[in-house]
Image (cartoon, rainbow, N blue to C red):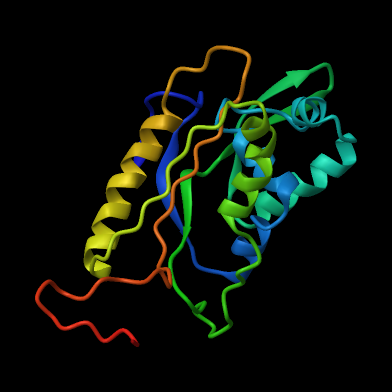
Length: 196
């Protein structure tokens, strides 16, 4: 499915499942995830990305190549500048997700990145400046309900991605659903089994 409303300035799929360890590993480097975030704004050249990231062009070119080979970015257009053809890269999807616990070849999918770890790191300064808005809630629900709720959250994320770009500040938005070891109350009317 291709979506062409809202940012960025090129067509891309709504979601793509990551089915190989190489794809997941490509997302595990913080510079590569930042490149993908920048490409939510618009398509960009390696030179533009290097300028925004304040990194050497060769470093950024390497990371763009890793993303390209993993199928996470693609060339969305080109332009001639003097004798050189400039490539503009864009994401292949708004949302990437790990689809299976094991890759097709039986290899375990890596778990070497955590969006909440990134969000915690990014939000630390905002917290100290009193600019962090957040909630955490716990609910005893079935796995099916959790999955249905996650689909609704994915729609909210898609809406955030499509907001018109304006202002000078980049805001982060983190959302997740995960099992915890939080205690639960017994059903009403059941005898308590707590020690005396």
